[in-house]
Structures are given as C-alpha cells and as structure tokens.
Length: 343
Ligand code: GZL
Image (tube, rainbow, N blue to C red; front, side, top):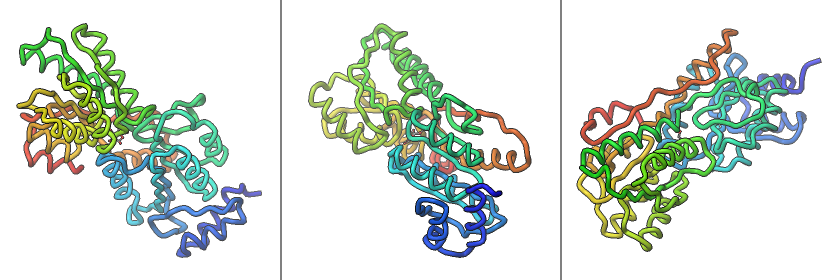
C-alpha cells in the first residue's frame, strides 16, 4: 500500500516533461485540483524543492528569492517550485498544501509572520515532507514540525544599532541631550520586526534621555513608510533619529524628510538608522544619507542546500543556523566593497 503522497509523486515523476497544468490534471485524482509553478522540468532523478516566499516587498526579499532560484537549478540536481505569497499568510498555507499534495521532497518556508503554522506543518509532517524554515521564524507548539531554520538574530541586529547610536551620540557630544526617536516598524509580527523592535525598546529603556515619540507601520516598504513618516512630520519636526527596520522604509522616510525640508544623514539634523545593508541601502550610506545600515544577509540558498545535502546523506543537521552579520557606516564603505557583496 503506497501513501497518497507517493502515489501523487509517482504520477508526477512519470509525467516528466508535461506542462504543469497537465500534471495538475493528473493530480486531480489525488484530491483537490492543484497547480504549482515549477521553475525547472520535472524529472525522476531530481530532488524537488518547493519554496514558499513572503513576497517581493523589498530589495532584500528579491535578493533572497534570487539566492534560492540560483541555488536550486536543474544543473545542480533540483526540481524547483516557487510561489510568492504577496505578503499573505493564507496564500502561503494554500501553497504549502499544494506542495504537500504534489508530494515534493522538501518544503522551504519563509514565513511572513511567526504564528499560525501548526496545522499546515502537521500536515507536512504526516506527508513525511521535511520543512526547512528560512529568514523569519515560526512559533509552533511542537518544534519537531520543522527540520531546521536558517536566518538572522534580529534582536542582535537591533542591539548593534543601539550600541552604535550610543557611541555616535557620545562622539557628537550629545550623550546627555534629549533624543527623540521616530520608529518605523516592519511587518508587524514578523521575526525581523519583533527582534529589531525589541532591540530598540530595550535600548530606550536603558537611556532615560531617549524617547520614542511615535511608532508607525512601515511594513518594510518605501511607499508605506513615506506615507506614515509624512503624516508624523505634519505634526512635529522635532525628531533626532528615525529608526527604520529596513532599507526600503528608510528610503520612504528620506523622501518624506526631503519634502518637509529637513536635513538628514551624516551632514543633517536627523540620524537615519536602517537594516538590511542591500546595495541600494549601502550606496545611500556611502553617500552619507544613511548614518548606519545593519547587515541582514538574504543569501540563504546555499545555506538551505547544505541542510538538504545533509538530509540526503542521512545526517541530522543543526536545528538553528544563525548567519554572522555586521553593520556599516559611511566611512567603512567603498563602491568596490558594495559591488563585491552580491546583493
Ligand atoms: C529580514 C527580512 C525582512 C527584511 C526586509 O530577514 O525578513 O523582510 O529586513 C524584508 O527587507 O522585507
């Protein structure tokens, strides 16, 4: 007796070369109709890796998707499936269910937020499909529901920013002055937001002269951050620091500051702190528009592949794989360094 998954898998395997839709028609007998986007040909001896991505909300996210695509190629021995959830958890859950029905070998999940994954991860476990979580974390009752996680220590990123701000204010002879901080939050409930926010809020709690005057939802996008910061600037221009939880929202804040006639960056009145250290972010930093850009490395493709290779070899990978990260200020940067980083 073969499991439903293996029956579906056998249909898929024998359907190599068919279009996804015709494969879907074959799968119809396996349950609800499903269509999944394959980015490589189906083949019997390829390892099928199915990735559910958050979206394309930022330069960081685009680089993250590209790292996965360029790793899981046919030439490297993979059949790669990719779905962009457009920032919606319900889309990711539907995608995961399609992957389970498809009978893929591995699921890779970049979860938009931490909660709400228990049920679908239990379904993946019942189908005996290992799930590797990348970037943000999942908060589940039973941590055996995912095989491994690869990503950043987001609270440490926030702590790096706070430590830099302490030193910078000291150097500027402003360690004791009142510091008014506008906090541009990333996607609410995402690990990156939770960690970077915790780092800042603990830093503010440790400095009685630091104050968060407002927390606005930047949602990791330039457009939303611009909209929210513009609204705040209509109420007050008495701001010393804007703490943006990614580069795209920093660009939105900068756009709003320029329209309000305020100066910012190395030679301006408002200190700009950002995260991600993407090419665009580091270029703005080199130009002195961003005072600090904390690195958050999106190149998870090779890291996920290393885990899959261990699993294929019957080895047990570490559960959590933290990426080593640093930060950048204008004086640390050159065009060559930025060019060399690959994202
Ligand atoms: C961080 C990642 C965040 C980035 C944003 O690992 O989850 O999501 O900081 C992206 O640019 O949108």
